[in-house]
Image 1 (cartoon, rainbow, N blue to C red):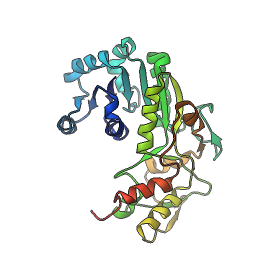
Image 2 (cartoon, rainbow, N blue to C red):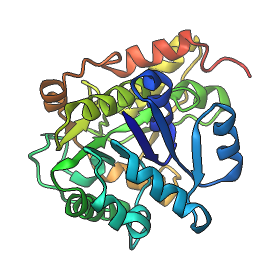
Image 3 (spheres, one colour):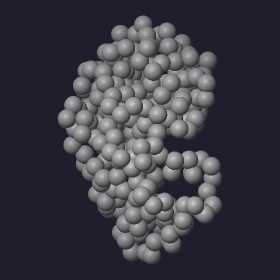
Image 4 (spheres, rainbow, N blue to C red):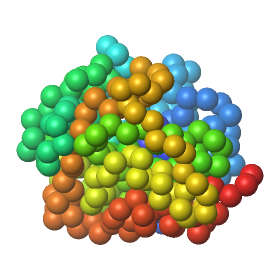
Length: 286
C-alpha cells in the first residue's frame, strides 16, 4: 500500500511513526526546505508544495493507494485542490482521508452532538473547513473519509509543557467544555479510516468533554506544583484568536468512531493522556 500525505504535520508524522510497516512507500509534502531535508534524513520522500516540484507530486498522486490530507484550507480556496484537484479526481487511490475539525459544528450550548448534527460554523476558519469538506466530497466522491478532530495534544503540545514554560492559563467560562484527543489516538483513527476502505464522516475525540481549567489543574497535580490562578473569561486579556475558541461549547460523541472503525482509545480522557506524557518526561525542565 502506497501512501501520499498532503502535509507532513503533527498527526501525519505520528501516523508514519506508528504504522510505517503498513506501507510499502510513504511520501508527502512540506512547506519548507529545512523540514524536507530532515525527513529525507529519516528516509521519507518529501516534496516542497510549490510549483517547482509539482510534477513529482503529480507522479506520486498517480501511484498512491491512499491520499491523506492535513493541509488546512485558505480563506478563499483549498490549496491542495487548487493545485492538484484534477489529478486527485482522476487518481486510482481507493481512499482519500481528509483531516478536518469539530469546529464545523458551531455552538450547541454544551449539548451532546454527533456526526448527524448539522454543521453551523461561526468563525471564518470553520466556514472554510465546511467549504473544503464539500469540495473534497465533489472531487473524491465515495472514496472520501472525513475525520473531524477535537484539539490534538501530545509530545511538546500539552498542558505540562505550557506549565513548565509559564504559558498555562486557567480561564473559566461557566459551563464551557472541550473535547480533545491524544495524537496517538488521532493517528490510530486515521489508520482505521484507511483500513475501512469506505467513505464516511467520523468525530475523533476523547470520551470526556471537560472544562479547560480542569486539565491545567490536573497537569499541575502531576508536576507537584500549584496551578495558576483562575481568570474570568469575561475580563481575561486574550487575543481574538484565543477568545474565538470559546465561541463554541459542545460535548462531542465519538460513538460512531468506535462502532464503525473499531477504534479503542488508548487515552480515553485527558487524565490518561497527561499521565502518559508525564511518564515520558514531558513538562520536565529543559
